[in-house]
Amino acid sequence: MTEPLPPFLGDVIARIEAPATDREAPSIPADVTGSLADLLTWWRALAASPVPTPAEIHVDVTDLDVDGALRAGLDAADRAADAGTTIVVPRVVERDDVAARTVISLLTRKEASRILPQPPGMGDRAWMVACAGVRDRAADVTEHRGAPVEMLDALDATAIAATVGTLLGAAARRTPCLIDGTDELAAALVADRLCFRAKGWWRAASDSPDPGRAAAIDRIDLTAGLPLMLSDDEGRGAAATLALLNLLTAGDDGYSPNLRISS
Image 1 (cartoon, rainbow, N blue to C red):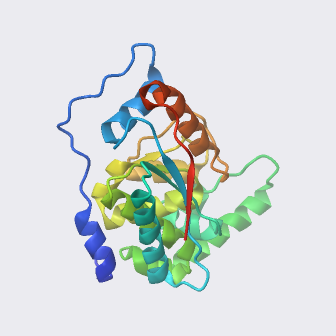
Image 2: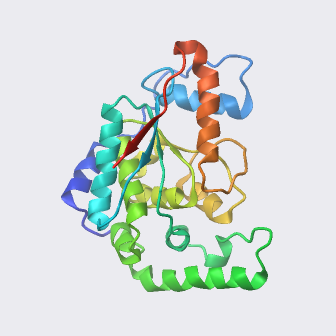
């Protein structure tokens, strides 16, 4: 990466440390196996408390530029950590599928046709038009591939930028994140380019048949999440993961409330 980072962002990145790898492996009940055992192992290895206290973070990016959106995401992560949150779910409100898939295409170095799904009911022509939209937008900003913040600025992707801030801010506060959604995974790709250490605090909420999501998860080398094969942007994977974590840890310390942090 060659772009000079805004000082406020560089300061946060400097505080991010990868999770310790020399900790003793957490004990998992013998009757918890497979993907659930992986989930519980991940949680117990990172968690600051036995039972998850989640916060779904939404950031209002109205009238913000990319730098302002990054700051807002960082601030939201700080407020969540200060409120006692132990697991963050970043959620993009104003979605831009073309911008998200442009980011995924550029940062995974895959052509648009390889990261765009063709769901049932979508005809070949509509799919080709969608591919052309991502291809053309990627061509317009490809010079910024090595400068992710400039790329987001060129795409006017302020909502994705806010999520980048949330992901980096949470990692700086040693707070795990569940990533669920196309825009959120695009943000994770950018955040990973800015600080490779941060991904140790993230987990994909679910695997997905969506080739764009799968490409992002593979490029970052994220833990793939539960085998739910979801492709919606409604946060169902994160909701299912949190529900299962509550069930798996209920005996540790009881249930905890859901929090929502808005900015």
